[in-house]
Length: 113
Length: 112
Image (cartoon, rainbow over all chains, first blue to last red; front, side, top):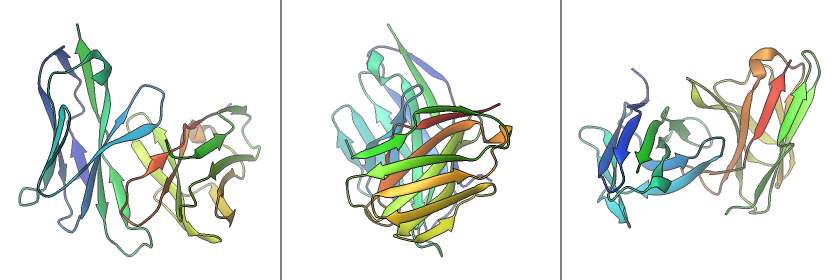
């Protein structure tokens, strides 16, 4: 089983739709969670951190479910500009000096008119 | 945006030649990382640094070396480039363990 798994999609949705992505992780010791977005041929950019209580930033809502070991990202009222690849990132404390950050393979979202 | 610059942005080189990629940050962050991104593999950690002259291997370190002589600079060297090292290379920085990373805009390397 991969440490971090995402549905690769692609998700094709019309403008205005609500879309949700899930990401599962295998290490129960994982402590920090993030969602990044990556546009084609660009660097990943932090979209939001995911907190235990859940958090919202405008049209974006992130949730963490520790019992089932997954995080989710909900996008409401999708815009054309939301088209991108969304990466799930999980940070796990470990023997290394930096803690281990593991990236999911990404979920492709295409929003069409 | 975090002050992080990668150079060069694009490079084409021949098999067997040495190549050095540079990452420069102005954020005074302790942690710096080199990743490569390939279709079907996502982002994979090559090497990272947790301070000046303090570096360690990531999951795909074979064929790569790094150096960090100053807080702001982290160099990635391919001693003898191979075609399997054709990839997009991203540098990233973070201020603390487990903190989110901020990425540079990448170097697209082609080894012919």
